[in-house]
Amino acid sequence: MADGEVEYEPQSVKELLAEMKDTAELLIDLSYSAVLLGSDDVAQEVLALEEKMDVLQMQARMSLLMAARKPADAEALAPVLGIVGAAEKISDAAGDIAKIVLEDIGLPEEMRAALPEALETLVRAEIGAESPLSGATLGGLNLETETGVRALAIRREEGWLLNPDATTEVRAGDVVVFRGPEEGIAEVYADATGEAYDRPEAVESASSDLERAVDSIVLMKDMGELAVDLAYGAILFDSEDVAKEVFELEAEVDALQSRFEAWTLRAAGRVEEPVSLRGLVQLASSTEVISDAALEISEGVLRGLSTHPVVEEAVYESDELIVRLAVEAGSDLDGTTIGDAAVKTATGMRVIAVRRAGAADETDWDVSPGPETPLSAGDIIIAKGTQAGSERLADQAS
Image 1 (cartoon, rainbow, N blue to C red):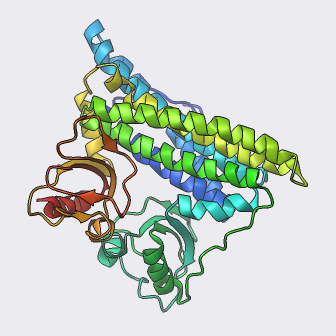
Image 2 (image 1 turned 45 degrees about the horizontal axis):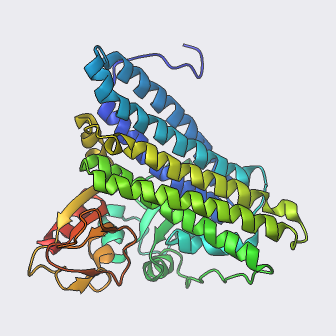
């Protein structure tokens, strides 16, 4: 077989879909990380993962085509093909974001200052020789449960280690990309480097239109990532209500894109180098593509097509799973807020949607819950995280 060619060989569609989901989510994180850190190394890893995704999607398409033997099979597998295509679309968008760094397109400093908030907080830390993290595994450190901080990637002499797991050992000299709430990041960064964490200073914008354009991209990114999470939740729970929320989020991102374009054009007349806004335009375009992909993932549910069992299994067995839980009376979550219950810190899970108990409209989901969001008996929550974290959250809710 020539280099770069892909031949059919029997493979588990479930495993391919799970790997595509994990790779797509990692690509989103790493592409924005590359922009924030201005790192060619991370950007190159994004392009390498994009090539891997191309192979995965081709293998998945061939396996699905081999499985379709009659019209009923085609109907059942059509939404699965949509999910495969959506994951590839996310991959392509992430690659375009990485090229902002690799091709030195550049971004206004206002954008670099705004991204950490959009990414929770993201920091690059080199593990010191005396660090308490050195020599321990990520599972042993239990960072996600103790601080809400997750290690996205590790760079060492032999190259980048992407999506490290509980068995990964942290070594002195490793450069780790951490993501999490600012309080947790400050603690982990100090342990890792022996130095205090300095939050990036906000940059005063010379143009209110440019500031609005940057704010639009940050909001688009948050909505796009939420839409992807909810889309997988919709197919996992075969929920048309949640799929409709994805549809609404995608429409909001489209509207934000239009406003972004108007503000950017106005700002171009007020900045010294209008060409410096090229990276901003490319970032916004790629961010909008991610929300389009989320809608494609949930489209089968919106059209009344049942979720194929292989998709449910793939989503459930991926690195980060999505769970749906009911808050029971008298539980730790009953009568408190997400922040007061320390859900993220105590469990490592991120609540992505809440539906109120007794809501007149069952489609009434709060898809932007924050620390102040109240919880009470009968509420339905959708959360994302690890298997261990989901079990801890279930304990809180029961």
